[in-house]
Length: 210
Image (cartoon, rainbow, N blue to C red; front, side, top):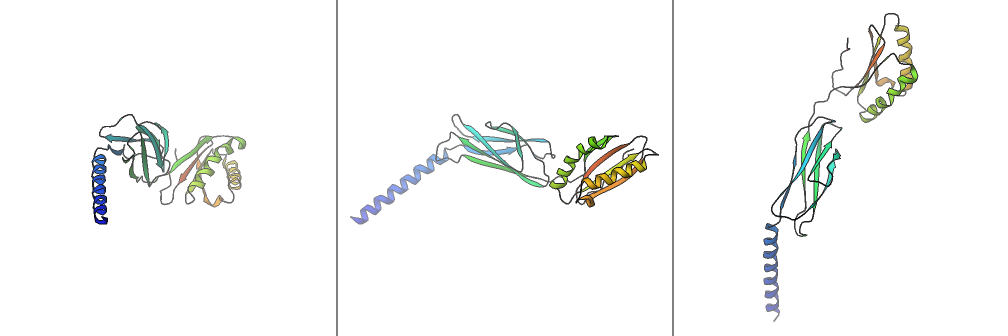
């Protein structure tokens, strides 16, 4: 009797496994397609692809190392990333598929952008109270990239060097204790103006503009 029960149990398990396999082969296949390489700050897309028969479904996206700009809840999301040299992953979860079907998939690609310098600010002949309004974005950029250097091109008229030098001392004081990360270059010009650049480690610094 015991052997008969064991045999019946084995047959039941084999039948259940065969049925489950038959159901699994009928499940839709989910994949995620990306739009390829994108520059920092540029839009790119992840698109969900469902192969096979299915009813009405819903889409839920999650991204790593990127931000969704639009399309959450649809088959395609538009996203943007801020940091180069990272892997970006887009994962979609599909609602509405049978419970025994795989309902999620991910797509991944490597962003390998050559680093370059970024101009953070440019302004001309401002009073100090207006000039310092440009500095928070500089400070934020320094915090995001602790190894980067800040280059400031101080353009001045022929009789404005003393005034430009005094401004530089005030700028150094503003950025304490990180003033050693600031590099100043004075350039003669027909008007007073300032360009500020973020230069990552290993990147050639920009040249002064005429």
